[in-house]
Image (tube, rainbow, N blue to C red):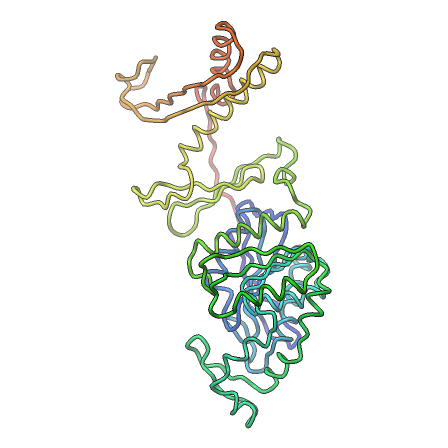
Length: 407
């Protein structure tokens, strides 16, 4: 689920943005993402990081800086300082329309931008940089081919990532005027520095400088073997997952169950995208992934729906035996439940089957460990058949289906 929106920067230009939402449309927090230099909000790595965050219940606002992507404005009139102003404007949009961002994430030069913008975004409690330069002026080497023309005539068209961009003298001067040591030292937020030791665009020594300048709490996470743009999907998904786990400590949501503390309010939400079978599931605020095996067109990113169904029976069985043994004060040390689901012909099932054709068969094996006598073990096996999920599966189930109506 996502929403397209626009907001206006200081010069009145409309900036294009996208708000990625968790499956249940009920975020525990909001993050603001700053993309890399001359990139856009639609960069694959940005999407993957946002996806990993939304799976953990964190909404992500990503937008195109002025003059880039779908945003209005003249890129040649922008600079590092205007990017910071765009970030502040984006944070105000979140605050006014949804909730102020608790997390700032920046990739490459966007990382340097969030480090400076944090001072003007008081709601931010955690800042993460990915492949960020210590000095914003690090990007100036990209203009080497036109630097003499820029100095002489005031501007030049240079090719960046295969595309032409006009760079003006004021852009270079603004980069040189930055004081990263001061605003990193005064950050006053938890900081996570993500960097690859083999980054050929922004060397890992930049991460060392950022880390040295920052005060605690601060963390460094190595993106081993990743390239600067995180083109390998596994690297960007990993980065997003670690940001979500790390930030949770600092945004006041350390436990997933805080989202739905009342079990009566529990809702399970499952959402699949435009292609493939991979499905994000939120169950009482807990993030899960369901999928199908590769043999049937899935990516095997998570258990199948039947796996989840059978897992529910296994978990309920183990919990029920634990609860019963505790009430009886029996010496039950451990319970392991092993299950398998198959479809078999009714006549082949050694059970009381009333259906013709194929039926569902769940085979359950229970390993009971503890100083228990035969009667106690027999009783626990009887109790297993009385667990709530077991009763539900063997009882009459009514499923009512309606279509949700969106405004």
